[in-house]
Amino acid sequence: MYEKIINGDLSGDVRIVDLRSDTISKPTPEMREAMFHAIVGDDVYGEDPTVTDLEQKAAKLLGKEDAVFVVSGTMANLIAIMVHCNQRGSEMISGDNGHTFRFEQGGPAQIAGVQTAILKNNEDGTFSLDELRNKIRKNPDFHEPVTSLIIVENTHNMCGGKVLPLDWLEKVGNIAAEHNIPVHMDGARIMNAAVYLKVTPKRVARDVDSVCFCLSKGLGAPVGAILAGTKSFIIKARRVRKALGGGWRQAGILAAAGLVALDKMIDRLAEDHAHTLKIAKAIVDVNSKIFKVDLKAVETNIFIMYLDTTKLVARDFQHRLAEVRQTDPIRVSVKASSRDAECVRFVTYWEITDKEVDLAIQKIVFVIKEFEDTFKE
Ligand SMILES: *Cc1c(COP(=O)(O)O)cnc(C)c1O
Image 1 (cartoon, protein in one colour):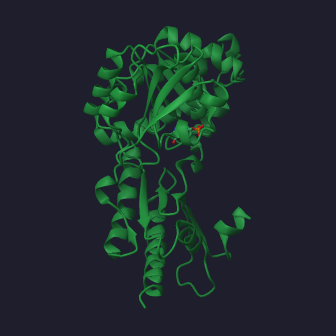
Image 2 (cartoon, protein in one colour; image 1 turned 30 degrees about the vertical axis):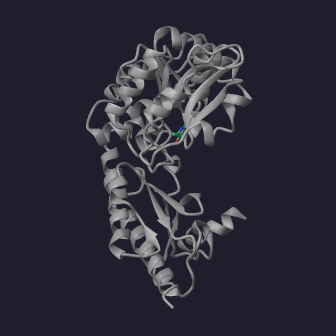
Image 3 (cartoon, rainbow, N blue to C red; image 1 turned 90 degrees about the vertical axis):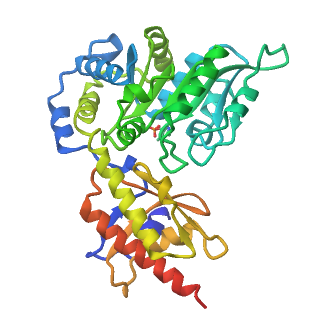
């Protein structure tokens, strides 16, 4: 059913440009080569040298004492939450558009037994510092849960890949420190943030106690994420990972791709950022009344296009974008994702080259103009 929706009428000459997510990205030829040659061992025994190498390099990159290689960003976040919120009756504070709150199946509640208190996310992925201060439970009496963690997300996925301002992060860190509460950064795309800000990943993660990032998104690795923090935090994280079934054996096969990702795929993220901006600008240039992009908000490899829901909903647009009709002059199928009825999300990654960008623009502009014509009368 879903395949039908996204593929439409695809005849042989149709090119597909998949902008749904950077998770679509495939491992590079160099990664496959490194995986083939990887020296491996049993990582549960701590004997996989490639995993250890990846963990140490990632820890250094993030400016943390130690790191652990895990299956996914979701697992990295859950482990961080379980280590930080290790007493029953814990509460963590998150933005209402945060990935851990919206898209991790309530894992913190379901598995960790942790309640989430939410703050309204601003459009740039931040939340109000005054509201944060209010949400923190000071000297909670025996009725109340105990505030045990603050989570921030960088770049912010649902806020269109926005980069958290460094001075805001510092303020969150200061408030947290005042109340002796740790901060975890869901930095699934922290490397995009660092590249955008032209600072080191270490600088971006400076004011948080723990941080994770995905190797399998814009960095192109097939599987895996890194969770980093203090030595004692990572010792506990390894225990929790094992309990969650995340102890793995010759994981060096995967870590080898992760090492290539760290080495070769970070600096080039700037190309992805330029590509999203180019697509976003092409949409703005149509000057549509129905479809809008705020160019100031386009910072990294994700952007969001808003549409007038009195005319159509995101699904209508996505469908037309992916479909190629017999009579269509442009033989391109573009796949995009949506957050809700009024937003379509586009994401770029290493396989979206200049050529794919141009094809995508042709199709997107074509479809926008077609809808404009439809609603002109
Ligand atoms: C993708 C994503 C995750 C989860 O990562 P998976 O590897 O897909 O489990 C967590 N946080 C953010 C912000 C993400 O975009």
